[in-house]
Image 1 (cartoon, helix red, strand yellow):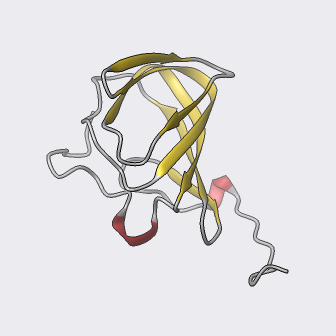
Image 2 (cartoon, helix red, strand yellow; image 1 turned 90 degrees about the horizontal axis):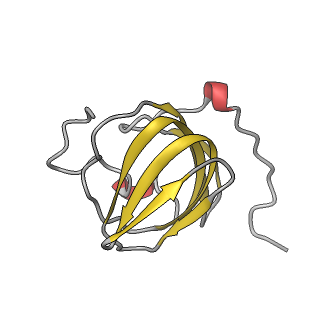
Image 3 (tube, rainbow, N blue to C red; image 1 turned 30 degrees about the horizontal axis):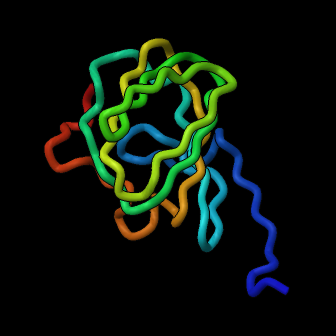
Length: 122
């Protein structure tokens, strides 16, 4: 039996926001979810590497994922993976909504901080 058998419900309407606009959803000991809701089109976001693995699913809109020299077009119904430590960035092409899961949890221990050279604006 698991050490933590408690059940948690997180409403997106009341969940905390991160510095980059993401909403933090349910989080366990080793995995967490976040929501990017109606991200507006703009310039390519700064390239980053992260100390977690990400899998995502597009709900609405379109975006480009630039990952280690590859460019992937993301559209509704698509899912993707960003390996831990991979250099990547995103460019939102149409108002974009997606859900991501990260392992380990992105919001723990400053793993989800803004890149040092980013002002937080697109």
